[in-house]
Every structure is written in C-alpha cells, then in structure tokens.
Length: 183
Image (cartoon, rainbow, N blue to C red; front, side, top):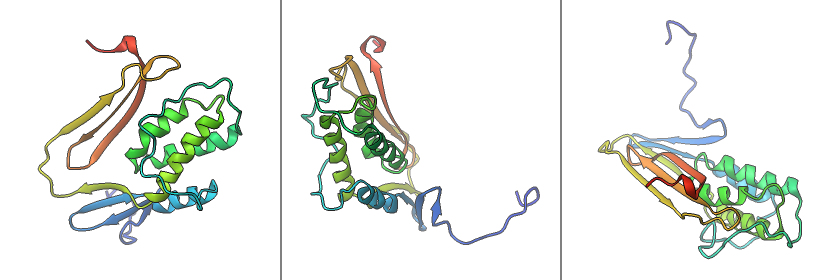
C-alpha cells in the first residue's frame, strides 16, 4: 500500500471512531468504556443503583396506550446511544432493540426499561469484545428466538452470534412476523 499511498506509522492504535482499542500479543480488546461512562452521566444515572441484567426476564413491554407520555427526544436519544454502544457490547443488542420498538409513542413503562439498561451499563462499563489471535478457527453459531413474543403484533424476536475465532464476529437482533418462520 505504501507504493500507492503516502503512509506513516503513528504508533499503536488506541482509539478508532469512538472505540477504545487495547492490543496485546494474544489479541485485541475493543470497548467503549469512556462512552459508556459519558452516557450514564449524560442521562443523569450516575447516582442510580446498578442492575445485574439489562432487562428482567419477566418484563413484557407493550404499547401501553393508557400510560403517561415521556419526552420523545430523551427516549430516542437514550435508545440511539445504546444502539451505538452495541458496536462493542452485543449483550445490549436484544434489550435495546426491544425498547427501540416504542420510539414513536414512548411511555413511562418503556422509559423505565431503558433506564434499567442504563443501570446495567453503569455496572458493566468496562465490558467489550475480545478478538483472539490464537484460536482453533472453528466456526460456531448461536441463536435463539421467542416466537411471537411481542404482545403488540405477535412478531418474534430472534438474536444470535457467530464465532470464528473465539469472539463474536457478528451479532444480530431481528423482529419478524410469525408467518415468516421457516419450517
């Protein structure tokens, strides 16, 4: 590439597009801990109690037409920030995706679910994704679905990750209608 482009070595990569990069002989660790800390502060959650999980297993979010409205800009800002954080935090993808369904008319119940995710982020700011140099190169995939779990439109939520080198190389979360289910 140096024949085509003028290049210079500026040292070891530490930050790239908001991602913190930590390199070692064994691999690369990518996180957004500084961004996670700034989110907690930006949305006034720094004095909140830490949550151990991003979402309760018993929570079933719904449209909640009778619920009290919340500030749409605040809700969308929180959701967008969490979705950006999923670049290095696949553990947030499902819960942020579920809450993202209600951006048109968010209610207090939806905001409370997003705040719980923020409380989880507060307690897990240093998490990220590790890419190992030395691995067995076996491809492994994981997925799960809740078949018609959305009480509003009976769409399912599916999520998965695939691993090629002992790291998450791809993560997806996709709400689909039940009739698209493969037999």
